[in-house]
Every structure is written in C-alpha cells, then in structure tokens.
Length: 448
Image (cartoon, rainbow, N blue to C red; front, side, top):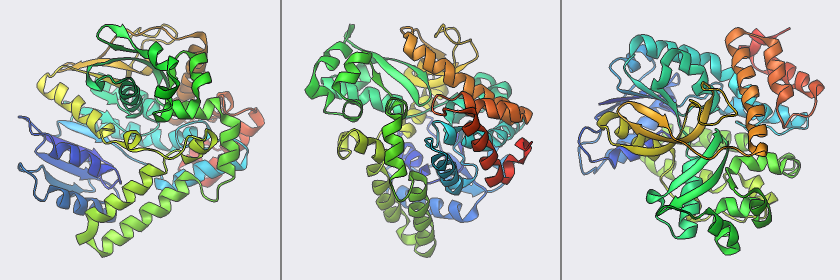
C-alpha cells in the first residue's frame, strides 16, 4: 500500500515512519511519498527516515520525496495531511499579535487558532479538491491544525473519506486508565467534544465506570498530567477530566499572565529549535537521526510549560511523554480500514446525531468504531449544560472561520474573533483581524 504524507518535511514525520517500521502485519505500507514545498526540509527528513530504516527487521517502506502534489497523490491508498501554512514563522505572529492585544494566542485555541485557520483553510480546500480529482479512492487522515475545523472544511469534497485525528484524547484516556491500574487497551472512554475542547466523562472497564473511583482518589489524580493541571477540587466539581487544552479556558487569566511574562512564545521556541535542527542536519546529514531525537526530547519536555507553571504541576514525567501518540492512532486507523480490523478510536468525524446539541454535519471528537467502511461514531453520554454551551459557542466560531475562508467574507472573520469565549471585545476582535491581515499577505482577501 502507498501512503502519501503532505507536509512531508515536517518535524514529526519520523514518528509516523517509526510506527510504520513497527507494523509487521500483512498488507502493511510498502511505499511512503513525502510531499512538501520546501526541498531542504524534505532532504533533512528523508535522511532521518533513511537512518531509522537501517537495521529494520523487515523490508522498510520505500521513501521517495517530491514537490509535485499530483505526483504525490497518484495511486495513494492513504493520504496524511500534516501541513503548516506559513510555517512556524506564521505561528509566532499568531501568538504575538494576540498577546500584544491582551488575549491568548495559542496556535489552536482562541485568536491564534482563528488566524491559523484563516491561513490554512483555503489551502486545505485546494488539497481536498486535488485528492478528489487525482486519488478519489484514497482515505485522507487529517493531522493539520486546527484539526476539527480543517476536517469539516474538507468534507464537502471528500465526504466521510476524510477523518481528523489528534492524540490528546487517547493520551488522556491512557493516562487515566494507568492511574486506575486498568489496561488502557481494554477500556472504553466516554469522551466527547471538539478538537482540543473535550472531556472524559466515563472510563468503563469490565462493564463498570471507574471514573468516579479516579475522581475520589487524590493520589491517583496527582499521578498524571491532567490531574495536576486542573487540581483535585476542580475535577471533582466538574465530575469529568478535561482535555489539557481546556486549561486555556478554565485558567485563562493566569495563563495569559504567564505567557506574557516569558521572553519567547512557544512558537518562537520551536522556530529557533527546529531551524537549528534543519540547518545542522543539512550540514551533517549523517547525524540526522541523532539530531532529530535530541531536538524532539527537548520539544516534548517543554510542552505546555506555562500551563504547568500556573498549576504548579511540575515537570512532565515519562508516563506523560510515553510514545503512542497521533502516529499510533493513525496506524490503527489505517489498519482498521485497509484490513477490516475492527478498532475503537476517538476521532474527528461528523456528529450524525450523537451529540444532540449539534447538527449531524458538525465535526466532533468522539469515540468511533472503525472498519473497512470507515469510522462510525458510537453513543456516548450527553453533554452537560456547561459543556454544551462552550462547545456550541466554539463550533459557531469554527463555522464562521470556515465561511470567512471559503467565501472571502470579512464579516464572518470578524464574527469568528468577536464570538470566541477568549476574546472579550468586538473592538479587540476588529483589531485582531486588521493586524493579522496586515501581517499576512495571503489574508488580503479579508481587507475592507
């Protein structure tokens, strides 16, 4: 089978290839095509993959690279979309513009996420159109952030053959199960929400919901990242465990102060770190894998550092950073579809009536049963009033952003900024929109 990775020069691509090397089942991926617009980044990542494949127990997937999108797509069985329009340079602007105007600028949450979406959605739609024309039988697995928003924008062209994935829900479920001493692979996670905006509301093992036991144990909650981030009292008040990204909502003021107080934003840190990696790999390609591993370790250990400081959550431990992230979700999804191997995964798919507060076509993040027919959402408990209110508000923002990007609507873009829960003023929203348009030439379509 052939896998095409869009954004093939991206830093996290070796995680996907490592997962493929560990797949020894029949019918595995035998060909990987890396597509990117940056040849130097393609060369660097290809060098990492070549060194990963050295000494593999089975014939490793053959890797090729191209800057021609149609060439990359032809004959693909699966397409991974993992692009970053504007690169990390764009992320730094997303963050800094928001912070300068007194609101959070995280890349997928709030003003920064909206700006990222406005840049990304036109390109994602063009890619979806090319996939539909060149590889209509391919399954598209969308990693591109903001993942739920981008997946919803691609569905009109690809239907249910595009599925969004994220490793945050599965990581949360795994950590919660381990805190209870439950085998993560045997548990059912009653999780629901939008991408980067969801809650674990139940954890069933042996037919029994074990989440109440977890919420009653202060020691168990303190043993994993989300328990430390949100605190025992707040988790018990909620009666659920939020996705880590909800820290930006529940502790918005404290996090804003913490982020404004650092010398460099997360985007700036990653830009400097990864620029150094690509430059050094270009000079010493024989050390590509070693350089990548070193850079990745530093990247993971500093993830959401400001939120952990606000919560006094301490350093990330090995269990929080354990392998098995989005690349394993992607591999499980591919095998389930390609080989009709029934799997249960938390994915970004159309709602289809599961959550009654949202319409059928709204892309939500919920447990699904996956087989050769694709992903089918399963029944979960309904949202509380608090959860439904926040989700409906953010879904309206996502749809305004999609409308702005696909219809070149400035008024829709303004609504997206103004209606977001983390933007507290229409005046601020207008300033955000104007500043982002001034900073990014490809947002000229939103000028007055």
